[in-house]
Image 1 (spheres, rainbow, N blue to C red):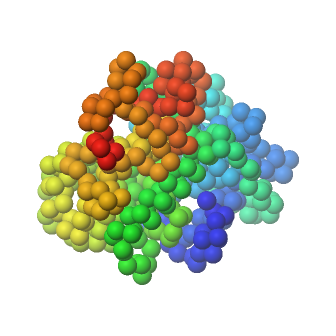
Image 2 (tube, rainbow, N blue to C red):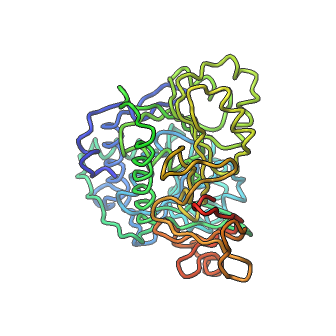
Image 3 (tube, one colour):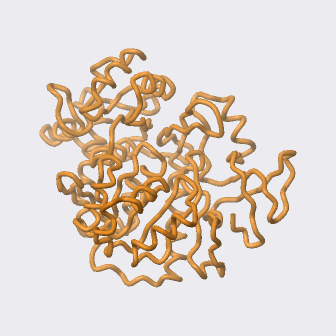
Length: 422
């Protein structure tokens, strides 16, 4: 992601802003932190690094709410192809222990306020306390991600090279209930990520043929409250940032008051949402008093958005012509479909529709007996393509049930019209 000519030739700009403290991180600072972090994590112990190596079975867990170092740590681990386990910050100690055990975590980075819970869970699974690090902030003598980065810089440890990844190299694990049962660790590969990113660029280019946007004078500002340990959040925070310059305001966790204060404070242009957050915002006592005029784009994902709720939201965001919707799931890396702009691909978006399949994805609507459904006939959506996950980590039975001959059985019922709109 950092090695494309467009990214390498970027002038410096503000990439991330902490919504609470106002602290900023520039693109150059972020890039250097990522590479120095990769060196701290991946350099041999004899050179002062931690010696992490995905080929040796290392998997690094992240147990934290949103923060800027979360994003940097994710990219540091991608550089050295050491898999990441994204752990819900709302887990109980029991749930965390189960997730650590399922994903076979060998090191753990933790938000300070969650440290005691993490220590309890680690004890249950036999993860030694010296393998727990602080993600952002300080707790006694515990080493933090920033401490590791600073140590590389102080000691002048040579940067480790970017490790080559194949399309099937494991990038991260994200937890999903799947179509049924207990949470499972979905295996997302480097190839899955690349497929989604290329598809996003292709979709954006098609959208801009319709919208014909004026190039912004400064990077568009996004507001990120979606949890980074979920599929939607981690992609918005970590992987959409580098196709072109953008500034991301990082909110630690959902807080409607903070979100409404942050939009006018930081002149936010783009707001990714989920339906439950939209419901809270449109019914918030302060929304009528909040200047939302800077918003020009609103996204909704993760669950079905009722048309009435979408229409109510649009009454408050006057400069947003359409609420962008789609359908996806962790097993598909991110989106499986996106609603089109009017006129895109010669189509008009339909109320209640989640749009058309994203680039590179093939779909089928399947009857219960396994045969193909007809146009406008409901059935289970199956999808196939480079963005379909590798399977469930350590769970061959669930993998065989959900991933069949390259097809992902989504478990969700759809029908498709003659234009392919779901």
